[in-house]
Length: 454
Image (cartoon, rainbow, N blue to C red; front, side, top):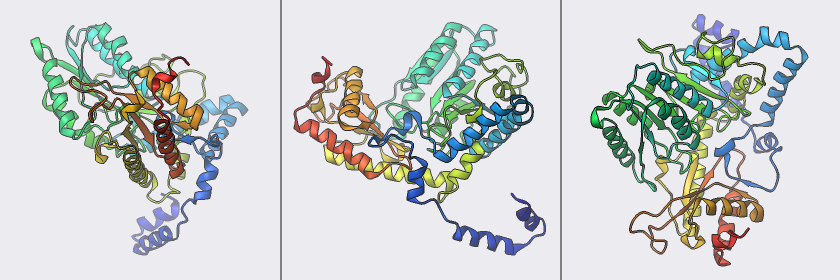
């Protein structure tokens, strides 16, 4: 709030509200040509429909980042003592408001969601090692958890004595109830033989295949079932779906800001819910002289490095507010368009979406025709490379193994899915190129076996 706004508010000037509304009506939103300029650094000629993997960063934010980098290089001592801590606090405050957290102290900034997972899972491992959790107590995670998170659970929780159970989620999936049912069964398994479920790791949006998980409902089930701690891995969430910490109720929640929130790589937040009796035993894995001052402070200094990506969050707010509806308007439009493009592709190939539109974010899974012969993870990588090299299309592909009784000659035997993303820089032609490229491969009798010798 600026000084003029504060003056009007304190003096009860009702006319100010009218002026504000009028100003909003007169506000000039960003134009198509300005959006094009913001992303003119993107390699030309590429149908870049994979925002989900690495995100994107507008030119104006890159410029803001360079200013922070220059400020450090000009006078490092001044930067460290007078600007860094203050700037990171400002970014944490913006994030706190975006996610509706109670306190800015609940928000730490780290490099990425993988780092956040390491922080949480090292904390859980200490609970086992120091005897607060018993050997054999369980941790439950989703089968489609991100690979690095699975490895972190193996590296920390399993080695410390935890018993890990995977909830095998269905895909394709048609309803939230299917996910909830499988999750309940995993919790039941976790309680077998007198075990206690100490941790649940829940994705908000699974990466591959991409599905929006009913995270609020799963957290509520965890509370009802006595799960000690709940960690939500929401790497794709901020800027992509609505986030409300008070509503979700998890103990830990992380999301990358460089995927769907226009920050440069790499920056993520880790939310740690304050609660009565909570042990202050959550630490950054890089120990600096800030150790013991709370995770947020520990994370704000892990030695000499480039902190600029963590300092531009206020600039990103200015950028997204150039769009009607701000970040909420952007994500709603992205969702609408990606569903339209997904349905267009499904119709063109005679296929279906991997889940209903209300279980999609700004990413959609579309089945690929079985005649392409996708029979392994290696096939998906080879086909992805072929689409990049031959058609200049960048899109991830998921391999889905056949279930018992399915074969590639029936309607159920879909073994390959593309994951398309939509972000503000995308054009309809990007998706038409994918449509036409796949159709051309089918017309020419292409199969993935043709790429095996390459």
